[in-house]
Length: 459
Image (cartoon, rainbow, N blue to C red; front, side, top):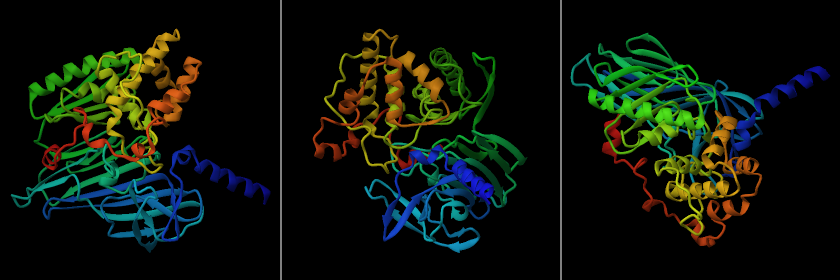
């Protein structure tokens, strides 16, 4: 009996891994304790009906419940049906205590342990049908994310979790009701069942901001399939696709030059593949080993393959880090004796914040230039050298602002507490100023706010 008790306790401790250390705290809403959970595995079965212009997903999610209460997940689209441990249940959309976001709470209480939910949802976002010819209709669907707006990660499309969580994801993607073949781009391991049926397995360390999926008619886009020679001897498979051959040529030239620079600075390219969708629009967005981007923003997005989509922020309060690092590179790795500002709050928002502060580019870049000055003044080679060490230590993990600060202090053997307090946590801003939203005036050209029409054109 003692052995059985030991095995049960050991198994529960294994399931309660480090993902939950970064989860926001549980909270009460309507007298019910809402609990953030740890997704273990999710299987998404997605069907596109090209004849009737309808898409749906069935999601089977195994998760660990760390304490008794009501489990939390998120889906922007309202589910049509949910089962929990094979029993029908319901969900409710609730606000987080700080009103920073909303989540969905399952309305069945659970005890600590492993559970399984199945969720049926229409796939409404990021999908467009062309039904002009019967039996020859086609579909375009893109799982593209944005990190400056709330609820714009995977939860836009299928049920998911906050960004703190890593879990095994498998997608089964099928197009029915048409004779038209389709192509599928994805940043995982793809198995082609037939011309309209694909399965993809994502790496275990992926999060809700990692996934890249793009389903298109087979005759759309000019595609280049290449290999990039990494400094570690690997030949990295690279897919470049856009509307034009000349655009692909520009993308390839810039990508090769940027990858050579980044590998020299931080080490071998840290993903198994690279997908570049040349959009022709302004700005871009990074995923893990994939990006949809303009040529101008390509260097910025490739920098994110190291900082953002390999070393991952675990919440909105750590999202400023990767934008600050990439923006510092964008401006040529400048060095400042002081930031240009007195104090700003980039990393002291509510615990439930998911989106990145838009001021992270300009203010964060200035702070990185200041750190470079402090490190060089102390006799260290500078911030770029620290970032190389930081990357080697933290790759494929989630980080907070405090993790970054702690590693920086270990590297420099000096304290940066006052600097972060003033320049990152807003320690010298007035309280009312801390709460005030200054987001609208700080749009960055690499991550602009696209119109609905522009976003639709990506699909």
